[in-house]
Length: 248
Image 1 (cartoon, rainbow, N blue to C red):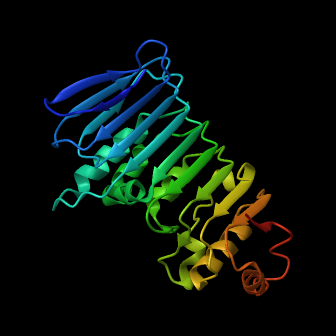
Image 2: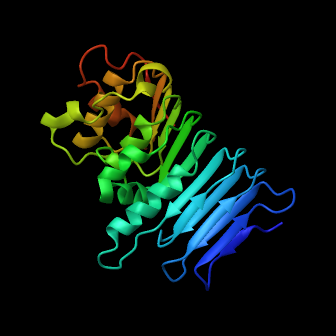
């Protein structure tokens, strides 16, 4: 059954997984100011794609384990804080059951527009995998991503599909993972960085990850210049690599 829903008119709509379907897709490209109430005891997968112009309330979804949050940039002037509110409320609905999330860099950036809301993010107790996608490398100093990681004590895998960058200077590297997320000490085993070109920013990210992710089994790098990248990695402090870095 097709459970793709697009809001066209009205101010409120309740969406649910019908019959035996365990998937629900919502497209949010409608006039702003609407409210969606999303529920379904059988709902296992939820997908959102849109501009975060609406209020989304996810409730009574005890089976929800997988989410896709593909928010896109809103160009309406003065909308930043409202977008942040909608992004936070959407994530709060996932709560304890979520195991895997694909989230866009635009949504992560939106979360930073109202930093005071970060304290209200839930603990993602069962979240094991985060995959970040978008049109550009994700800024690892972005508090939107770091706040989610901090709230995911059992995170095992972090994949940055478009690569990584770092907006802070080298003197602030110690602040990137401060405090060190609990998952770095006990559960985070795999990190994947795509489109790795060996910039100074990327090397600082690799250094920080290898220093702080204590149980990391493999840091995967995607590059078509493996030899050059290995030469650059050899400049890192002795003993830091320990066969933890590989290419894919």
